[in-house]
Amino acid sequence: MKVWMKVVAAAAVLLTATAAFAAEYAEIEERIGSLVSDVQDLSIAETPVPGLKQVRVNNEIIYMSEDGRYLLQGRFIDLETQTDLTDSAQASLRRERLADLNLDEFVSFGPEDAEYELMVFTDPDCGYCRRLHDQMADYTSQGIRIHYLAFPRAGVGSQTYDKLVSVWCSDDQNGAMDIAKAGQTPPRATCDDNPVEKQYKLGQSMGVTGTPSMMTFDGDMIPGYVPPEQLKARLDSLNGER
Image (cartoon, rainbow, N blue to C red):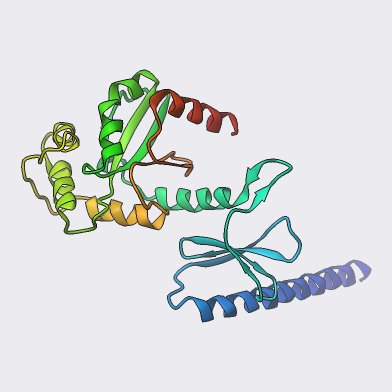
């Protein structure tokens, strides 16, 4: 009987704690609902700071006090460990998005047995994207395989978008990409199943705002152009942190 009473008491404590957490989160949920008109994805997690919650709203990471009164935006960094907790949360979000990627929809350069594989959101009318592409042999020599995803900065229906559709629908995707990255227009091609718009929206959902924007399959974002040797060092560093 004593054992049973202990079980009942433990269950009561657990239910009370669960109810308290639900009430605590309810205030945050209510405040977010008043601030954001279209909440499609909302999750709340603890942080190392008492009373401060990490809140994921759609594709954004913010922080709120447990009573929903105070809201913080920006980088949340543990200075003791030099860990960017915001970037870690965003990387986790990006990993979720990347899980649904169809690897056959990349336009890839470099050997399949490369030491590193990197996704690059690209726009053929972007100067630094062209510079990156011109150095493809150097990235390959550093052991990096590049997987291109389409990101027409001018949006769906733009001339850049049409170029990217022609690349992805070409019988020779790599050759068409070479032409586009040389500042020329590849032979026009269309296909119903091209992934250009889907990849563009994927990039937007993961915080891509410009090109080139690099990303590891673990969700680490490396924005902007990075020269081959520096990129190899960056990838070595990220690999060493795991």
